[in-house]
Image 1 (cartoon, rainbow, N blue to C red):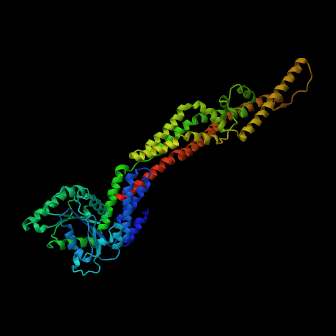
Image 2 (image 1 turned 180 degrees about the vertical axis):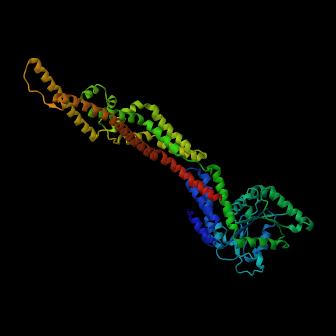
Image 3 (image 1 turned 120 degrees about the vertical axis):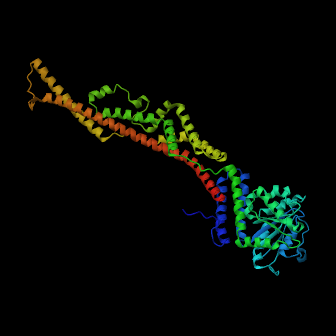
Length: 553
């Protein structure tokens, strides 16, 4: 099966060198899940995921050659000094002024495209600087071409606007560098609000213990070990911890090498986006679930059909068709004197107050009152029951959607069945040719019988009265009147017996055809009015679930 390629995936393939990336597949999956879940899950659940998908798509479209690295830390951590050290610039000396820490500073290295990226992040032009024209004295393994470095506002500022700006820009960073200082590296503010909640982002996180020159050389490894232990307890055991001194330059080259490695691998942007998508998908899953549900089985569909057949009186209709066929056929094929006796018994259909030669509409209208409200209530119950089976394994929002679909259809499904069945032609008014042929033969046999009886009566009367009449012809040694009488009677009885056996089989076949037509009609209505809406909801859930599975990787 060919994997679906969405617009985000096509952008990502272009950005990341023409290869289909995992993040592209995840983004497509998240977008598909959000689209399928609209009006099923709450907007406040889906809107953040939709916004993330849009932001990630923009990130991929803008540049795959840049890695956005954000320096975040507390007041006094030396974050801005580290920013100047990494850029090898004194920003005030190149005309970039920072009148307030509520704005981030940005410096970009390398290829074109960073300006559009910075505008997308909302960094003012006067807070941007490029090192394109600067003399870069870095060695090959510390060159930072492709880096967009952000110096974020202090996270512990008393200004609310600083917190908002930091929280906003953290979302855009491909790589997060948390700058800690020796006095406050265990400060709960940054750990509880930022580092611990972002434990899932360990692949795109670095921790820098700045101002390490303030720690005695013999105690530095212990301090770094303390930071690593704290991170491990917070669920980030694999995050690199680098000790630096922005003031003296200790460890700065180590940090540059780590940044250069990440930039060259071009993995940070993809890893951050992939984790963002996974986090957004998990939040959606918390409400919408991701279970692989059983759905509807053939047994469920058959149970629904049986309940709906009962609701329209199909069993009674089939029995009436067979009984009426027997009665009608015997009137055409039976021995005429016996037919007259049979007329004393009422037709099963006439007992229902309908014409046996009428349409199935008259038949069903007569049968339905005898069905009562119980069976019709059972049909509505069957619709609710199959909706409950369809919803097995679904979380509440999806269960509610399935139930709403069943309510919309359950109210009028019986009425739809009534209208559809009224238009069916079961062929009750058609008389088979062989019935007519047997009818003719029966009347001929009966005529021979009557002729033989009459002829014999005349002969008997003439003998009693002494009349002279010609002798009756003799055929095969028997008097012709006697042959007509016996032969007509014998042929009529034999035809009646043979016809009775054949008629039973014919009545069963006609009843079976009627049952097949009713079953097919009920199945079509059930499929159109009940199963199709339920299956549409299940298909929608499956699109959502498939998207979520891809988004989670």
